[in-house]
Image (cartoon, rainbow, N blue to C red; front, side, top):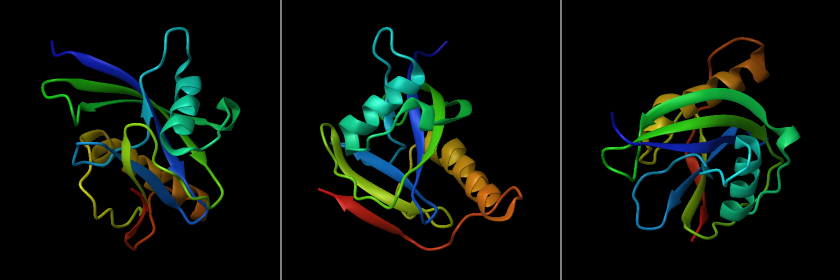
Length: 154
């Protein structure tokens, strides 16, 4: 059995239906913001803390919608799996500021994520975000906005 890393991850959407992705320093792939819960911290509390620490977003646990638990190959730890408790939140059109270990933050249009993606983001979380935006826009499953991505970062 391979080692597993437990994390909280966020599908953070803006008012234009874009999703926020981050790239850690000295890495090459983008992923959803989040991280490991501290001892005694719930998954939702961990995500709120990580959003504040990584990109300066202030979100409360009550604003999060639980999307489920997803597993994938870890992007930056060879031979490991990542097990993520995932939440969605929509924020107003805000600028984000990469902080701590985050080198770059991007708002990606769901129809065309033209950045290298971590397996969890590519295989599970961006498809979940596309389903969410499709549900919110048309009341039906599926969909996603076309276009590119915009960078906010170092």
